[in-house]
Length: 97
Image (cartoon, rainbow, N blue to C red; front, side, top):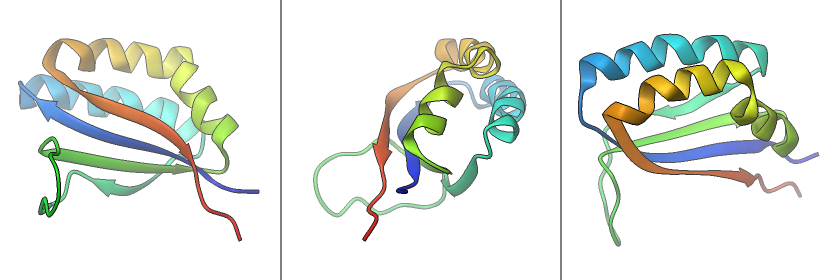
C-alpha cells in the first residue's frame, strides 16, 4: 500500500504565533503516526515559484493523511495557523512499485 503525504508550501507572517500552531499540531501528528520528511529547511527554487517554507509529512497511507487533516486535534491547531500564515497544502498518494 502506498504511503500518503502532506505537501505544504507556506508563507509565515508571524513566526512567534506560528510556534503555537507547531506546538498544537504535535497531538494530531502523534495520533496519526505522522513523520516529517521536510520541515522548512533551506530551499532553492530552480523552476517556477514557491513559498518560502516547504513541509512534507509522511503517513502510512492517504486515508490516514486525510483523517489527520480532518481530525478535531488538527482542526484546533489549524485555527492557530490560519491567522498568521497562508499557503497551499495537498494530500498526495506516494509512488508504490
